Image 1 (cartoon, each protein chain N blue to C red):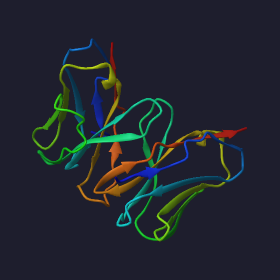
Image 2 (cartoon, rainbow over the protein chains, first blue to last red; image 1 turned 90 degrees about the vertical axis):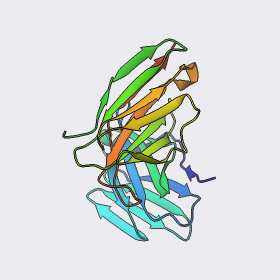
Image 3 (cartoon, rainbow over the protein chains, first blue to last red; image 1 turned 120 degrees about the vertical axis):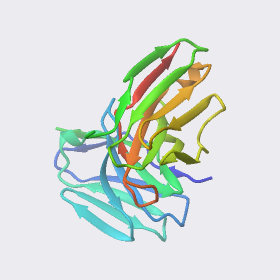
Image 4 (cartoon, rainbow over the protein chains, first blue to last red; image 1 turned 135 degrees about the horizontal axis):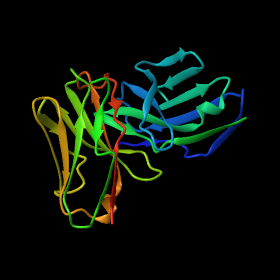
Length: 108
Length: 115
């Protein structure tokens, strides 16, 4: 069965700290990986995507992919209270398969 | 339109009734997806359209669920004889094309409550 696993949290970090969110996936052949942010009661919005091994940085966000370990992570530097949301990892395994999300709270 | 539009935003229905949920994708997007999100859960894939065809219906949970897409644009998800376990947020997404590299953009969802 194709699965994407995330720790549900909640994960709490103080404002200004680095938040680290992790995701593992079961399909070794997966080629594309996405991180979505979902505020409570809202729809998911894409914040990062990566297609190859290594890191990708966009502003305060860095996505890291380790295909050998089937592991993808999202780092949020200088975390802000507005980053408080649920972060969904999604992996393309034929169709986009979502993890159950990690709830992040950034404490002022 | 500027984004993916879904209607209604909220739907309350009685057990056993049929419901129709509508999705209007981003203009020019050929691929359309339906997902279901139960409270506190991730997104559960239901069905994928490429144009008007549905090459992947593998996520539809039962034969009470069906979907169609017409004119390569608007899609309707129909749930017949609704059950309480159908209560969830139904999200629609569209992408420029199908395939693993294409980014999906989501609508605001329809919150379905079956009493």
